Amino acid sequence: MSQTRILVLVGSLRAASINRRLAEAAVKTAPEGVELSLYEGLGDIPFYNEDIDVEGKVPAAAQALRDAVAAADAVLLVTPEYNGTLPAVLKNGIDWASRPYGAGALKGLPAAVISASISANAGKWSHDDAVKALGVAGSGVVKDASLHFGTIGSRFVETHPADDAEAITQLAATVRQLAEAVKVRANA
Image (cartoon, helix red, strand yellow):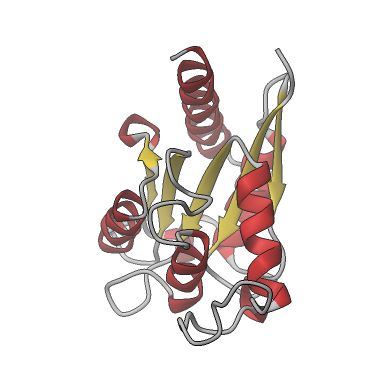
C-alpha cells in the first residue's frame, strides 16, 4: 500500500502554542507508511464569502488549502478552545475545504479531532463544534480517535508534549486509528 497522507490543521496561529506543539508531537508518532504534515497558511485565508468563491477567482490561499486537503487521505484537527468554541481560523478552513457544496475536498475524508485547553474541560466544546462542522461538511469523523487534553497550561508549561510519555502514547493511538480509518475507506 502507498504512503498514507494525513494533513494536520492547527487552530492556534501562535507559533509557540501548546496546540501547535501537540500537533508537532503527533507528527513524530507517525508509524511506518504514514506521513503527517502540518498545514501552514490557515491565517492567510480570507473569511469564507461566496462572492469570492468563484471558479477561476478563488483566493490563492483558499485554493492552496483545498488542494492540500484534496491530496490528503485524512485530516487531523488540533484545536484550542476560544470562548467555548473552536477558533474562527479553523472553522474558516473547514468552510473553504467544504466547498463547493456537496463536492468539497472534505467530503468522505476520514478526520479526527484533538482538543486542548487550559481548563479541565479539555476543549470538549471546541472539539464537539469541530466534529459537528466536519460532519456537516461530509467528512467521516473517526470518533474513537478523539483526544482531549485539559489543564495544558500547567501540564505542558515546562515539558513539550513530545517529551510527555502519556501524551505521546495517546497521540500515537489517535494517529493509528485515523490511519486505520483510511485503510477501511480504501477497502470499502
